[in-house]
Length: 113
Length: 113
Image: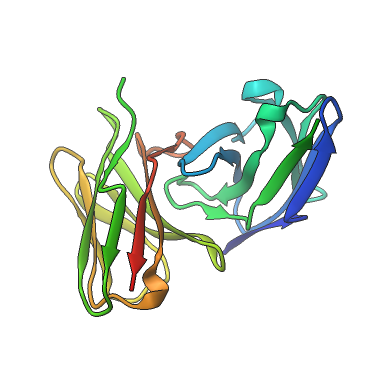
């Protein structure tokens, strides 16, 4: 069984500030981990994913995440927030097949000018 | 290449009716997954089809069913609609192997009155 916990349903940052969105997971098998972004009235878009190998993963739009097995965490960061980053972000975990992913409840990111 | 398309984009039904939603995956993708997104329950996995066979199934009642055709297009059907079935239904396609990236469609927003 797998589960994902996203800490903080709403995060607000100022433009240019660090973005940190937290994700902790539980998995009985080696996990694949994903971060997605969803803009209003749209589907989900993959930001980045961890499969195996390097634990620091770089994604699109300047986002990155670090897989920490000992902490069962996969937090998403971006050094400098842009207004266009305002959206809802989802962390997800899967086992051997990403087609069956378990999602967290999402974190809404607000960027203040 | 063309993305994942879902039809219709919006649908209004009344309790007790049934509904069929369609998903056309990216060309060459053999896996189609369906998810239900609601404000209260978040994103929940419904089922995954791969090469016309249901490969994984979530914890939804039998009123929710699906199928996949030889061209990988997929449909999901919900019978005897309930008010709680109102949701955004998302489909995602991938090649279907391991951590392959899932590409999401824009979703079908179903409202049950």
